[in-house]
Image (tube, rainbow, N blue to C red; front, side, top):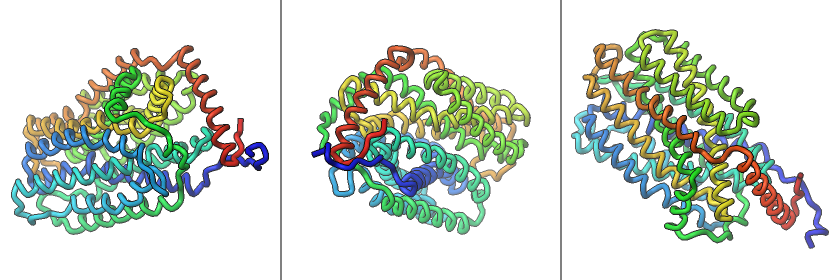
Length: 469
């Protein structure tokens, strides 16, 4: 009987916490190169693909995600295997996503490849890459809830994921600045670096799966039918408001990462102080929000983040030719990036808690899939809009760094920060409608905490694990 079992405190081994965080960061770094920094530049400026065709690829990509992401969330919640619901997708998807990443930088058809050949290559590989990214990233995103039952153990995983989240921001951005191929240059060294990077990241993702494991009891939980499950997400008012912000953050992060290297190539602001300002802003933002989250609440912190982020965008838009205002604006970018890393997952957790309060089910996979349905088009739109602004203002896609006209520089600024600034201002206003704050929400959270405690006690005791108050 349970009463006679020896109970022990649930702990997630340090190596498990570190390796799942390495997998998370590795997957994100591959994705940053493809969707935020490199692929659009590589096919337009280096290979000479028509910008209109590239924009079409991103639009098709957005449509593809309308089917791909929620469907995978539905499937993953229902997956049953000896490894669990999530690990099979991470382990066996790692080699494929690595190959898709590598093939994205190979010039199929040679230097004289037709527009049709480049269109097919970019579309096909982007679709394959994203299908694997969805499977792996979604699985890693919910892994803390599969690896541990107690909230204390889950928190110990999330802290490490937050620490490792710095790498997807810094590594691709800095590395691309050194290896970006100029139009007409020899691409061999660049390609070898990307091959090595793809192999290394895929290997890290694959190896990681041998250092953490899932609890299996959730595989037996009954879930809703697909259409009803999707509908329940959109009847959750807090989810609607959250998606305004979630869409905005993905759009802004994509646009800012994409535009930064274009900006540095054509403006006089030095790269080192700019990167330093961004880094200082990130550190300050993490400290600010972690220290004040309980006092201001997730909603209050997020409103502050959206406001400062928006101000930073308009500072750069208006004074992008001047160093000091630009550095101040980029400092606010850092605060915004920190808020995106720290506050958005917390808000997402509250939204899922509200869903559990309404439905009695934990549906992390479905919410992750439907969230991607909303946010992935933001990636497509950010890339397409940036290209549109560059084309509108006469940007020479075949020109080398430092050779663009003053008008093209204006196009870079508009494409880089105008729409992000507007979206962040809209998000700030939408948060006034966000309901998960105040005394009533605190009472609901307390009720859920009591439900979780009782559930944890039953599950942990059945497994011979000590529950810690």
